[in-house]
Length: 121
Image (cartoon, rainbow, N blue to C red; front, side, top):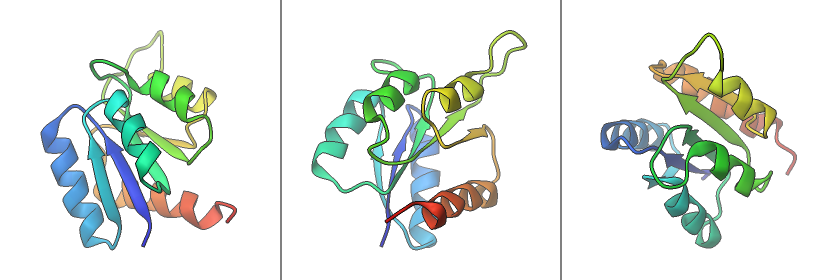
């Protein structure tokens, strides 16, 4: 069973994502900020993480850089701007994919499976 780390400061996003991924056969662990996510990753075998970009304490950019390829990351954000694309920046610093909120659960599942199926073992 693959373990997915979901990191988001919105409790509704955490709970709905956890429920959906659990129904799809994943083990899901959740964190509400980057500090909590990094601490969890020290004691849990993570196969992939979904990380929100804008959170209090340690945000998504810092967390992605700290993970630095330990496991694949999908960045998530509901923030859009014509001057700065946070999802493109997240991919430039190591995220393997990015999802713009709100996204369809099936799109999230496709992104997760694409990465896990193509990840070297």
